[in-house]
Image (cartoon, rainbow, N blue to C red; front, side, top):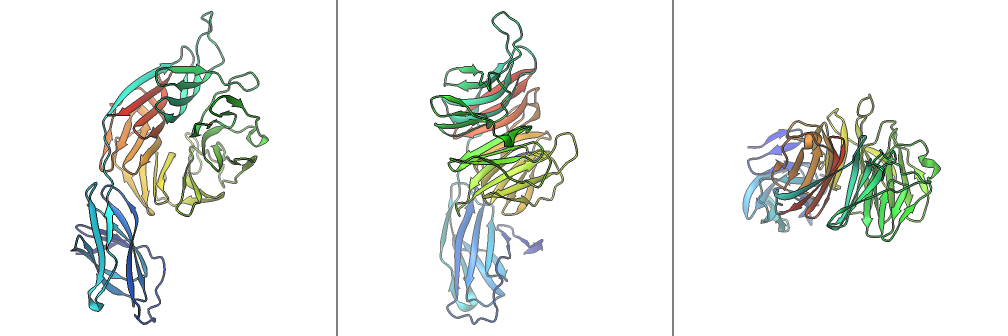
Length: 421
């Protein structure tokens, strides 16, 4: 039995989502008719398949087969239809085919292999830094297991045992120990809020400092940044994006200067994460929310410099975003949510504020937040990897089998590194 709710067809084994993309001209004769199946995306338990018709009179009844067994009968009314199949098993291969029995027409056989799950099991190490004031590590980035960077403000005593008012703003992991550094601008070490790794010769620390693989470089402050609070940085081989308070976004090409991007908001932009689409476009996702004052609550979507917003049906604050690809987006803040092909779902986790989401792929995602909470999705299930405590996590970085988390604990800067067992 098929029950239709908001264009979603629920079945016992398959869920068919009709995206009404292209209207078919039903006056065309059904000559040279064809059906075709194309895989759009796949997870451990789901597959998204586009069914395309050519020269076919619509509406028409189509049978969808999985491993030569009928799993759904679809009343097709549009030329291009997105089929969403769930209840699959990880690391398995399935064959799909669509058939119109009345005219003896069949599509190609599409072979789909689901993704395997990842392990929830990690071995953790914890370090704290700071001797006075309120030390805090705001962001962390991973090059490899021997090169991890965390930035913020670490306050130590000087050689005479007196409080040093100037913070260490960078800690670097070399595989065996942490080195505390002061990157200075005009002789003074500022608090650094963001770090982003592009490659071994291209690491950014806010827009003010750069690592070229050999040396830290102090960069001139472009006038575009005067009076701006920086929150996050993201980049690729084509350029660098910076987001901050009051709706601030700036972009720099590899060999060019900094330019503002009009965001359409005056609210704080908390995070920026980008992808490269199958059309070779750079797309950024930026959650917009203030912490304690009224303001916009939305997700900006920036495509090659053009700003739009992602529709969502929840009026909640969001502090971080991470995209698997152009089809699947995770966000967190007051709750954790996922958008798959335009449909939002809330993920039922321990009720705590969440501050950062990052992952390797659709089967390996981390969310961290208040009270030392670490959540991991392995492709099938979410698991809390920690017991709630007094730690406060600000950001998480993931690279293959390494996860690094930064924040604070009892007035000290905090870093935790997890290695997958």
